[in-house]
Amino acid sequence: MRAGTDGETELRARSLSYPRIICLLAILAVIAGCEPEALVKKKVPQGLQEALTFSASKGKKRKAEPSKREQVTLRIVSPANKGVYPLRRTVLFKAKIHSGGQRIKQKDLIWSVPSGNAKKKKIIGRGRSFRKKLSLGRHRVTLTLSLSKERKVVARSHFRVSAGLIGKVLAGGRGLADTDIVVTETKGSGAAKRYKTAHDGTFFFEIPSGDVRKITPSKKGFSFSPPYLMVQGPSPKGEVVFRGTAAKIWDIRLTDARENGETLRNVCPGQEAYVRAAVESKTPVKDLKAFLV
Image (tube, rainbow, N blue to C red; front, side):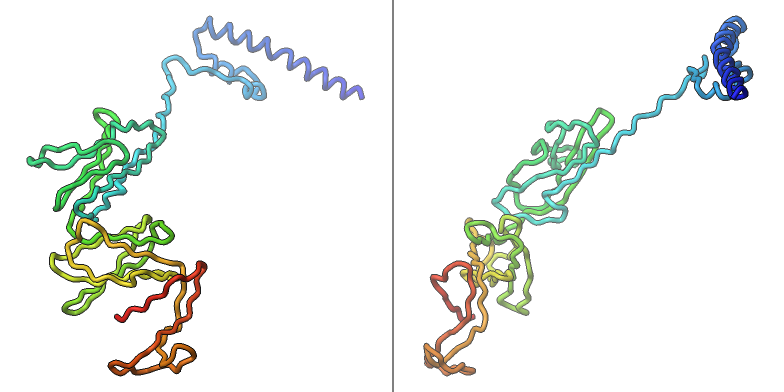
């Protein structure tokens, strides 16, 4: 028990002596004009050195760490690069910006196109998005974000404005997105191209003047009216419209009688035949029309 008491007394005596040593060293450091940190390392016990901090020595200034600024990125969402847009309709100009935590003002986003002289540019709008009609032909738009006099971020897009056919697919009064639009040539090889409707149900494709195309909408789980259209290019001022109904039609066949007739494999000229089909729809079917294609 006594040994423990003597140890505690010795430890207490050492801890009380530390402040005296520090004060003495501080006075000596001021008188001698030396660096306190170097003096303490020589004279102060290791255990106490860990509890001490020192300001930067005179003439040895710490370099301030440069602030890490996130990079500002700029992308033109619309008009898409190499995209084709219909004549007589407004083109959507829209940008996507990653500001990197910086405040971006609408007036600092400048949209421009070449004007006559290649070195000159004509401003057509400002801000993140707007709409504008453009003339027929090829266009190049430049979007410039000025962060300072020396710092600018630039994005570009090349696109065309062309005459063609404009259409829309509706279902329940709203645009039906992701509907397949099959466009078939009526002359030559009869080649077919496929397009997709946009989020609002609209679609557009180029068609040479005077050419005729067959347009057929298709989407799983939907039936369309009319089932197809024959159109001649270029598009008139209006637009073609297809109306879709959530319904499934299958087992389509011809019979020789209105009720429970036999299925016909061949039909002779002038022969009367009846169309039968199975229909599944969430809404009541008011009318069912058959078209010979």
